[in-house]
Image 1 (tube, rainbow, N blue to C red):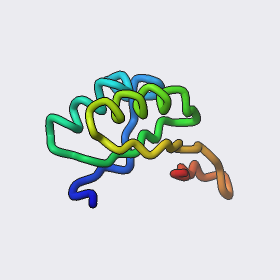
Image 2 (tube, rainbow, N blue to C red):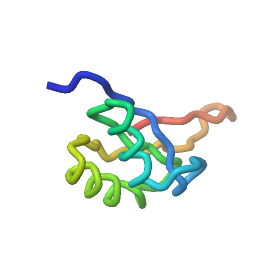
Image 3 (tube, rainbow, N blue to C red):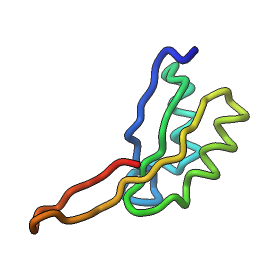
Image 4 (tube, rainbow, N blue to C red):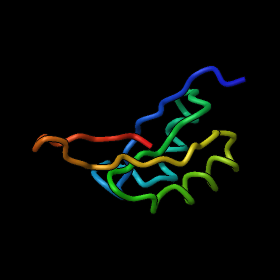
Length: 79
């Protein structure tokens, strides 16, 4: 059973400051046991995050944040 999670995280693969593996290590340090990497319009960092998560006992759910438009308004969709 997972206790603490964060399901909307951006890495340096989009507009975040940390590399995917560094995010996993920070999650571990903060006792977060499940995360989802949801970079903007890319899944490039998910593989690295999953590998590091497996090593350090942090469950990583691969994700993405898609930039879309609806009636001329910018809409972000998490997947």
